[in-house]
Length: 190
Image (cartoon, rainbow, N blue to C red; front, side):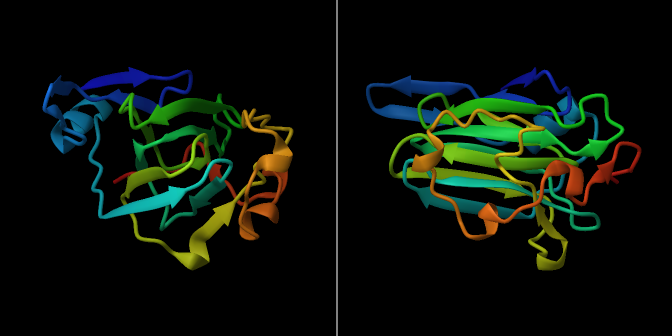
C-alpha cells in the first residue's frame, strides 16, 4: 500500500496494490498494521457501511462530535465520486480548508478522514457503490453537519447545483461559522 499525505497532513490518500491478470484482479483493501505504522497511532474500526447512489447525489458534510467522533476510511467499489474532507478544528492552521479526491472503482484509491473533519461526497456516475469503515458507532445525539454550499469553504462539487440530489437533512445544515466544531488542541485519539 502506498500512503500519500495531502495538503492537509492528517488526511491521507491510500493507494492499494492491485494484482491483475486475464482472470480479474486481487486487492488488499485494508491493513490495520500498515495504516497504524504510517499514522503513528491506533485506529480501531468497529463498523463497515455501504451505500448505492445515482449520479448527482451529494451526501454531507457530516461528522460526529466527541465522544462519538469518527475516523472514516472511505472507498468506492463501483462507479466514481468526488470525496471531500474539511478541517473543522478551530485553531488549526488548515481550519476551513478541504481536500477533494476522486475515488473510483477503477483507481481503487481510498481516503483516510480523521476525527475533527467533516466529510462529504458527490456521485459522478450512476449506480455508484461507496463503502467506508468508522471507528465509532452512529450517535444521533452527536450527529452534526455543515452546509455543503458554504462559500467560506468553497467546494467545487463539479456538478451543476440544480442537478444535485440532497436529503432534506443536508439542505438544512448550518454554515461553518455557526456549526458545533472541534478545537485543534483537543485529544481526539487515545
